[in-house]
Image (cartoon, rainbow, N blue to C red; front, top):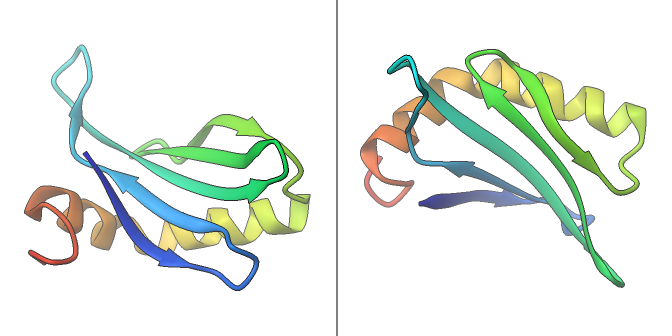
Length: 91
C-alpha cells in the first residue's frame, strides 16, 4: 500500500510505501517523489533504511535530488511510523 504525504507547488507528490520485508526479514520502505509531466512522470525512489536511490527517471535536477535526500534523511523515523500505522489517517 502507498501513502501520499504531501504535494509540493511544482506538483511533486511525496508518497511512501507500507512496510516491505526483504529476503532477510529486514523491514524496508520506499519513499517516492513523483511529478507529472506531459508523457509520464519524473520519479525518484529512495529505499530505507539504506537511503539508496533505487530508481531515478525524468528531469529532477541535482539540487532537487539533494533536497529530497534531506527530506528522506530527516523524515525516516516519521515515515516508518506512518508505514507501520497504515497512513496519516491512522498516525
